[in-house]
Structure formats: C-alpha cells, structure tokens
View 1 (cartoon, rainbow, N blue to C red):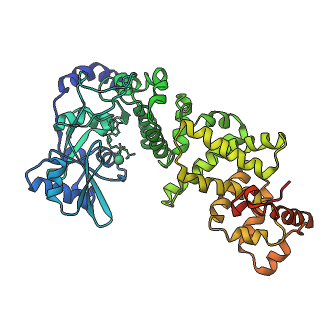
View 2: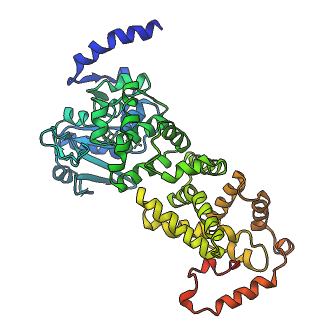
View 3: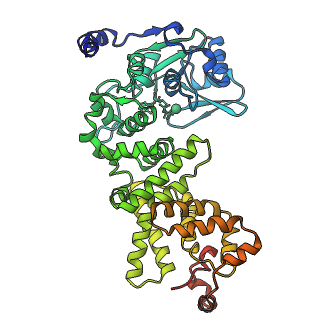
Length: 454
Ligand code: ATP
Ligand code: MG
C-alpha cells in the first residue's frame, strides 16, 4: 500500500524528467549476459561494431531475456544502411520493398537487421481517413527508433559488447513491474496502427504481463478501427495470436475486450453455442499444448477447427432445404469459406487441406467393407483423426466412434476383420449408379466418391 502510494507520488516527475533521454542500465543491475544471445546475433553486432557502426539486439528478444524467457528470434538494429550491412556480411540479402531489412545467414539461423527508423512527423505523415499511418519507412537515429516502437518493454537496446541496456522509455522499470505500457499517447498510437490493440492483448497474454490502465482504456472505444486494417495484416496478427502457445488466454482476453468481432465474426456465433465453444476451446488448448511441446501445428487444421461448427450448421440448413448430404457439405464449405474470406483473408492455399479434413469427417462413420482401410491410407488421415477426437471430446461426435478408430488403426488384420461392420449392399448399388453419371456432374474429389449419397 505504502509502496503503491510512494510510486504514484514519485513516478510522474521521475518519468517526465527522463523523456527523450536515455538511461543506461549496466549488467550488474539487469543481469543479462552476452551468453544469453544467439551465435548469429553476437556475430552480427560484433561485425557491425568492428566496421564502425553501432548495433544492438532490440525488441522482443531483450524483453524476453529480462523476463527469463527464451527469445523466439534475435533482431538487430543498427545505424548502418541496408547496403552497408550487406557489405559487412557476405552471406546476407536485402529483403522487403516498403522497408528494407537485411537477413544475415549463419547456418540454420537467420538474423534480421534493420536500420534505425523514425516515426514520420504528423505534417509529412501519410494516413488514411481514419488516421492510420500508411508508411513509416524513414531512416532515423536510435532515439527515434525507440520512440516508434509500440510498448516500453519492446523498446530496449542491448549491446552485447558492453552488456548494457539502453532505455529511453522506462521499459526496464515496466518489465520489472510486469506492466505492458504503450509509448506515448495510447489513443494516438492505436489510431496510427490499430493492430497495436491486438498486440497489446497477445503480448500481455503470452508474457503474463498486465496491461497498464491507460494503455487498456482507449481500446473499447477504438476497436472499430480494426476494420480498416488490410486483411493480410490482420491474418498475420491472428496467426501469431493463435500460434502463440497462449491462444486460449488470448481468445478469452479478446472476448472480454470485445475485440474479436471484426476478426473471426463467426467466432461470436460459435462461441455462443455450448458445443461450438467447447470444440473451439479444445482445439485451441490442443494447439497450445503442441506448441509448448514443440510439435508442429498447421494453420489449416486450426482454421478448419475454428470454422467447423459454422460448416456443420450451414450443412444442416442445406440438407433441410432438400440438398443431398454430400453436395450440401460442399456448398456449406464454400459458403463458410467465402463468408470468412470477406473478413479475414484466410489464404486459398489452406482451402484444400481444410476441405479435406472436413470431407473426411463423415467418412469416419463408414465402418464397413474396405472403406476404413482406404481412409487409413490417406495421407491426411492422422490430422483428420485428431480432428475427430476433438469432436468426440467436445460431445459433438459419438465417443464410441473415436474409440473404434483408435483401436482399428493399430489392430491386427484378424481383429480388423472382426471389427468391420457389415457392408450394406444398398450403398454399393447407389455408388455404382452414381459412377454412371457423366463426369461433369460428379462432385469431383476422390475423397468424397465413397460417401453414401443419402
Ligand atoms: P514476439 O515475441 O511475438 O515476436 P515481438 O515484440 O518481438 O514479439 P515482433 O512482431 O517480432 O514482436 O516485432 C518486433 C519489434 O518491432 C517489437 O518488439 C516492437 O518493438 C516493434 N513493433 C512490432 N510491431 C509494431 C507495431 N505495430 N508498432 C510499433 N512497433 C512495433
Ligand atoms: Mg519478435
């Protein structure tokens, strides 16, 4: 209590005195040693410094090291231009058109090097009609580079040679207080780039940091601005969020702040149905666990899971309107994907896998004849089976079905023969009839050729 009061009284003048100035924090105080950075990051800062430039580890990596977390990657900021960086490292290439960065390669590791940038002054800034910055690609100095970053915790520079941290915005104190605070006026910064609202949610969930009250306050009133952000950027951020290893926490926070509306519009609807909510949360928990275990996760699987209940309800509507099950499933998949694409640019490259996963679901019901054997042989059987298990666990599919497939996969030939259900002649007849159709009228993909027609 007394500590809090002390902080409140003394914080403001202390902060304003240091505005614009840089605090240098020695190793003895912060404790982050050079051995905490990657081989490549050390090589890049050494190389640039030997060539007469300044070079620092910046952003998320410094923050993570202070929080005793393993950084995902090490970004370097320097006063050398991209061409100058290129000249120092033979194995490097310039990437990006809007803002040019350099990738320096060391075996498996690629280190991203960016030249200090500055925020463009209000009068020269190009913004859209809502105030969103359309470009921020001017070179600047170190202090300007700190100021254009989003959170104080993300604006620290670490010099591996001296093991000092350069802090322009009291990020060090904020990290120690476990607080995520926007640099500058949060409302202005969200207007410049509304994605910062999503970053606030994602980073606070991922890092277990609390959002500073003034940083959180404007979000409720500004969330509509997200609808002006280009879809590709929203998707990028959404993927980072879903693949952060803390997706459940992120989605809960997004909902609590009513930020999920523009992102996955159907998520609102899905999360309101008990079965849908359970399924989505299970899928996210599963993803979080896989990421923590360093197992691969596929965005297509995740999107297929997020959209499944929407596909299910549209599929049902189509069948009620008299369309046969399989054509109805195709129509439902296309409709859901098109609707979603208007909001969030889920790239077409994921469509095939998502559809495959969905189309294989009704095939799990077919446990007669050779069909289960053929299903097992499909390259994406494992993913589709994992998907089925989530359905069983959420209560949408029969738990017995999951158990049957669990046993069938690893069973001996004799046991499989016992397990197979009697094959109904009716379906086979219908299948033969269906094969006589001219090719143009068939529904296409091999995966559905075996499904019963009605
Ligand atoms: P993560 O650990 O998830 O990678 P990060 O903070 O490193 O988190 P990046 O997207 O890799 O996030 O960004 C690197 C750095 O660039 C950030 O630490 C921040 O300083 C700056 N940055 C990223 N996005 C923005 C933004 N929208 N506005 C201002 N600065 C940003
Ligand atoms: Mg990063």
